[in-house]
Image 1 (cartoon, rainbow, N blue to C red):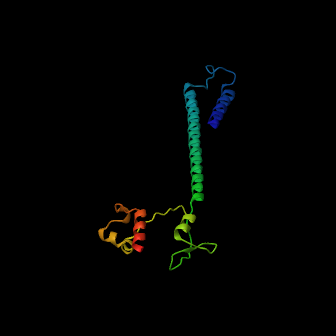
Image 2 (image 1 turned 30 degrees about the horizontal axis):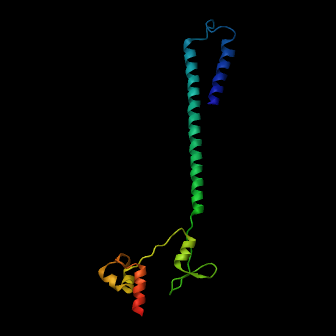
Image 3 (image 1 turned 90 degrees about the vertical axis):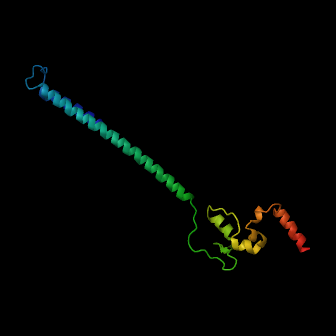
Length: 162
């Protein structure tokens, strides 16, 4: 936009010095109304072009700032992501994992320390049938049994053992 204003000012001064001279425009035979209209239109086009370019440049700079902000947010998110990679040495029998210090840890503890994952526990149908055959036959889980909370089950097991 500044360039358009400078060009318009230069054009006006150039015309004033070399074509108008010291004579008023009404006395200058070279000056016609048609020339004045054409020069005004040309100056207007230069001003409009400058304004359009200024708006376009401002939009591109704003888009570039937004893009840079998104890139920085993505980089921050990548720094916060923790993933498990590589080969994990796992015991074939107890399924414990050997960590970098050589200690054997449970799968839950290892994954909890090396990722954002949390565990919940349940029973698969095979283990339910093996551990709780009375519930496997009815299709009811031990948690759903009325009056069979952990305290009652533990007391019942202690009575059965004596």
